[in-house]
Image (cartoon, rainbow, N blue to C red; front, top):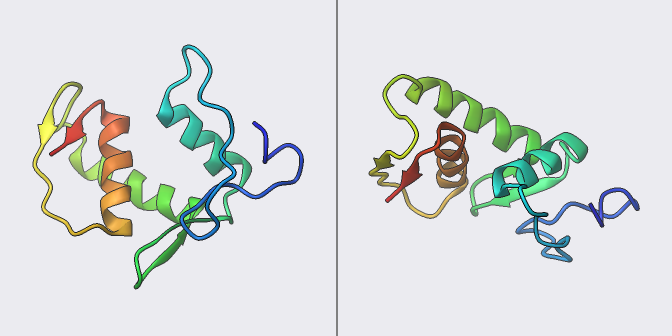
Length: 104
C-alpha cells in the first residue's frame, strides 16, 4: 500500500490523507483496514474530542465488541446503534463488519 511501504504515515482523522489507492478487486474495506492495523498499529486512527485511539487501540475495542456480539449478531443482520459520532461508534462499525452485519 502506498504510504505504508515507503515510510509514510497511515491515514487518520488527525493527519488526513493521502489515502492509498482504492482496494484492489476482491479486497474488502475491512481487509484494507486490517492492513493499516497490522502495518501501523501505533498510528493515530480516530479522535472524537475526548479519545484519540491508535489503530491497535481501535482494533482491540472492535475485537471486544465483536466478541460480545458473536452468537447474537450474524451475517446480513442490521443492528440498531445509538451512539454519538465517536471513536466508540467506529469500533462498533468495525466489529459489525467483522460479523458480516451493518449498523443503522
